Amino acid sequence: MTNRATATIHGWLLLLPAMACLALFTHWPAVASFVESFHSTPKARRPARFVGLDNYQQMLADPIFWKALTNNLWYALGTIPTSIALALLMAVWVNDRITARSIVRMAYFTPTILPMIAVANIWLFFFTPQYGLFEQLTGLFGLSSTNWLGSQDTALYAIIIVAIWKEAGFFMIFYLAALQAIPPSLGEAAAIEGASRWTFFRRVQFPLLMPTTLFVLINAVINAFRLIDHIVVMTRGGPDNATTLLLFYIYQVGFSFWDTAYAATLTCVLLALLALVAFVQYGWLERRTHYR
Image (cartoon, rainbow, N blue to C red; front, side, top):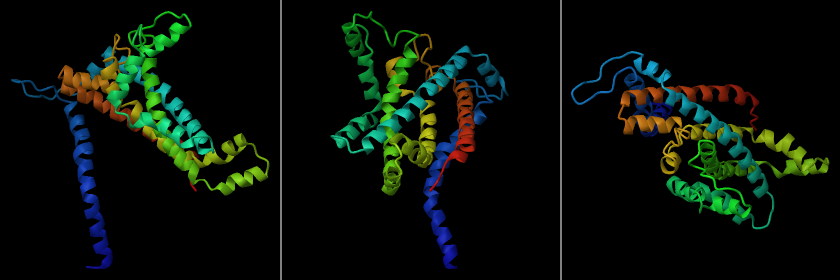
């Protein structure tokens, strides 16, 4: 056996555990969910039977599904651009030589390392009517009391605020690492040419950050469609499904209503939606990404 063949075999053997875990815990569940979406939910004395597209027809006629999809799109629109822009702003700031730079970086990154349930409980206190932190602040200005999580007009926005606070520090780390990888000579050359800081950022730094932006954007989209912890702790989808997102609705259908076939149908739609978004991201943004 040649050295090249031996190296190839060793390479595949090293990849085998990761490939097995990927197939077992990612690919197989996706295929199983797709197959189950064409069957009915098995009961104690009634096995699953093939129903064709009945589950998908039920989904199209389900008002809660459309409500959850609409909520998720508004949630994604509110969290993705805001958290990315805020992360980039924080990264540019803490990349400069500011006072107590290490403390500021730690303060920005701390929300990321907190458990999701702990974060939800902290903000649950902030949003509590009458004696919560926000109520105390608004009371100083004589404003009326607001049930932030109990009103259909404000509940989803409250969840969006929590998500931005949680994610911006995480995305900041990637931008900060990318900024530190940019050669200082580029900044020195721009200063010699008399370029302002804004011009240097717009013409030099931001184009070089596009690979990081693509990576962060993909993660932000995934996070926007996989939120469930905060919903369970803070609102449980209420009031009147105002904060029901797709993944929470799948969880509710599968584990509360125990309709596994319909939950599999919703899962397939969610996977198809994410695949479409990923295709658009790679097809459009990849062309505008500058690699060094």
